[in-house]
Image (cartoon, rainbow, N blue to C red; front, side, top):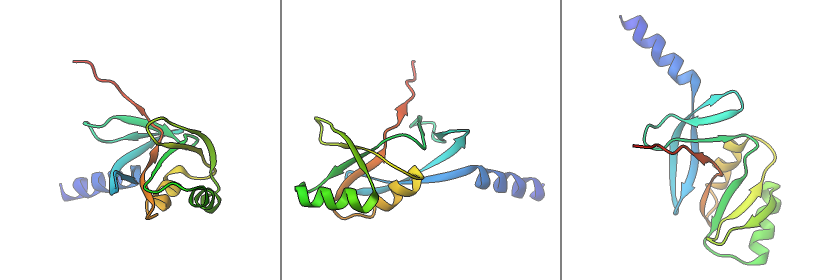
Length: 123
């Protein structure tokens, strides 16, 4: 019985990954799994899906042209648009999970997360 529990634990650990992001100034970790080209949440409460080619959403505490230019250059980001609610939408090169994790450590970043599609649940 112990062997089965250990095997299942190892399989879950190998198949699962963690998305490190920042929302409203607080770092959060969400359990995700990769399904082909898609990353899918493991949570039953927050169902979402995104891809490695998805854009990222960034919200800043302080916005000046110098800070934004420096930030974009540091992470090799390409600005696509600025949303009315204050998010900057960036196209990225590289692994989305790693880029979001690195940006989450920036002091001037209030929110950083992938631009994911949320699954709607009908009751």
